[in-house]
Image: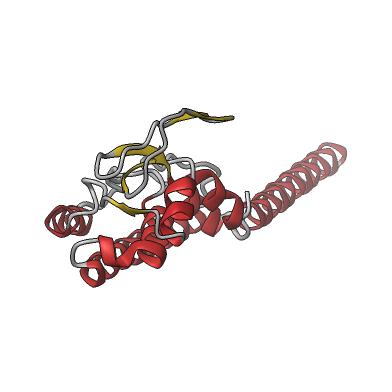
Length: 200
């Protein structure tokens, strides 16, 4: 998928809003029903709807529990200490953070710190992913198991990885073919020498 498609899918994430309007009916959406809305009372809506309402000054968006500076700092420290990928607090942590901070930065506590910590997490994980790929290609491996990667993280290496693995496989096949030819050539040489010695 393209990054824009992954961002589109992340917009289905449920978020909590505080509306400043009243709407007593239920709104029927393809993804499910939302409403009714009462001013000042929390309601859960898809992220795309929350963003739309926020842009029209119809609500404020409550920060998700995982978008807490202390929790993100703990997650950053955990990621730094682990040589493996740790489980992220949300499958689309980067996309959701960008969407919320771009539209509702005034609703997010310590928004600048949140932005920095999420960016640090992304950089650390992408660096770890590239190192893993270098190790995989350098060792001549043809497959690897990488747990806890998000869709966007996988997508970031998708353009490069298949071509690199295809080239690696082609080189291995070429090397194996050369070894077989050398083995056949040596076998033929021994047989010829044996026939020559017998004739003599």
